[in-house]
Length: 376
Image (cartoon, rainbow, N blue to C red; front, side):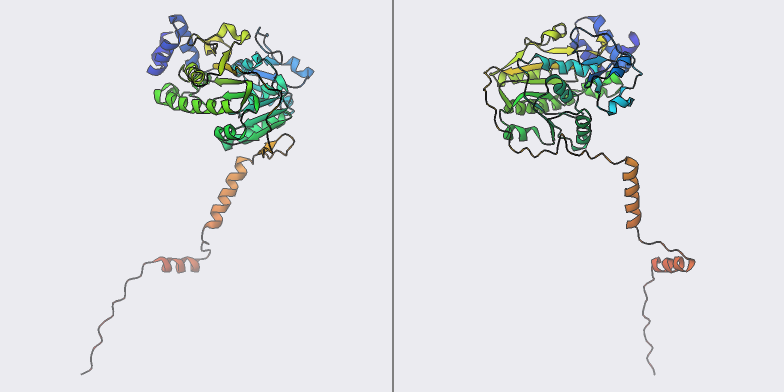
């Protein structure tokens, strides 16, 4: 155990010290993080296919949703199987299932769901499978990630799904009190990704954490305005920093007194020690994925019977539209090369042309006029 601790960065060591009271658990956490081989995968089952029963599956945990299967063989490539292309299931890290499962504690199945930071779409697909909402609006502000999101929603046949690409503040203005459930899978420092092999130990840097806290507060604040009375927000991250997790929720509850954190009974054994309100943590050394944080908060007031109109909603894509597949990278590069070649001036093709070009390019000496001789 001494070797992982010796190789760890000072910031990672400090994080381990702050996260765990037990020295043994600190060592286990560091070992799991520095091993970088977390491969606990799962599948959200979307179609009842007998072939799935032949997949290498692990035993069900007591809190595991019935429509989720754990993969027991880390070398099994679920995304390479033909059933994946047919939309029979969605493949994701099991720790994502952990955080997504907190939405199952909502009092009433939501009719309208907004996934504010959606790509690649795991939590949106989870919400679709769990609730089959009438509207599943998925937003992804980073345009280059939108095609992946659309591809997954279309492949998984998520009826009623739409895709937008806009700043969260747009939704706060346009869709006030419109959604029963808002998923806020917030951008974060991504500390758990190190357990998957990412060597970015800078994820523990204070300036990185502080930058994300500012973003997270702004996003969840905008999520609040989209929430109907009685509705819920699922706040989730894939990081361990209390500043990005419990402290963000603590700030949110203080600035929004009509909100409260909700118990998630099936995750009780994962209750965080960093807050007085119910929040839940998963760590890589627990063997259930790279790690995650989840907290479910709800509006205390009663839900009205009527729904606010959504309007025209000119989405980038809605289920049933044609999916424009991204062009192959090789094709794009070949097109760029051809355009660059076309922009070049024509090159000389014969010796005469080459000599002519050389003479044309050769700098000419300035001609000095000789004084004319006067005749005597």
